[in-house]
Image (tube, rainbow, N blue to C red; front, top):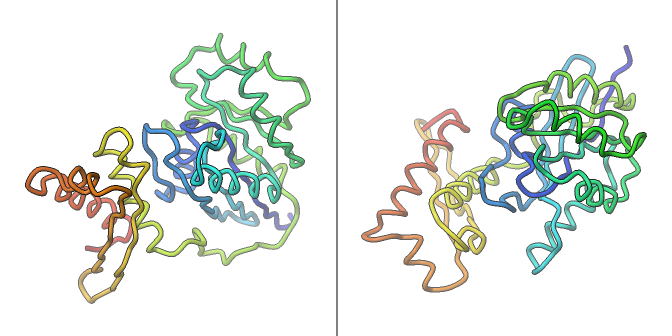
Length: 264
């Protein structure tokens, strides 16, 4: 069998489950997840290596109508991903309106073969899934696959469909490589995820995490990170009463970062 490799880019509305799917396919937490929409700001590559196959997955920000500069930058990442995809995974929540979803996907003007991925199937019945399948224009997709990214249902079927559509090509990355992003990036993202979990309303969207020190010592990795906010009043919210919230943010972040790095 000739070697196959290619870029498989994941598109969908915010909270369709794109980041959860990427993490489930790779068996590693590369993309942060949160019930809040627009958690993903960056395009993240995750590399799945199998015998004679390399799939380079790309998790993109949720497709939205840009309202300010951060949104515009996020949508630039989506447009870039639309142009370089060998295969496009068009992901929808099983509870979404098929008409709205088809309109959204048509707006991307994708040229690559498309697989419709119906996610969160564990939350709906067979009748609803049949209704979704009937709603989409015949021939619009190379395949339709029903999955639950959270429950990891039918992911093996999805991978088989992807491999069948991949072009013949030598690998693009070394076979032991999982992602092209540096460790500092993922540390900052894991801290940002905890901000989404701990803080309410607008706070998570108005923060940036900057890792200023990443030093690997003999027994542990020393990390210093700054949380940058837009307004002076937001500092007090991040800190919490007597520093309670910032301590909890540090505790939760350390747990995930230690798990990710495999050391203290």
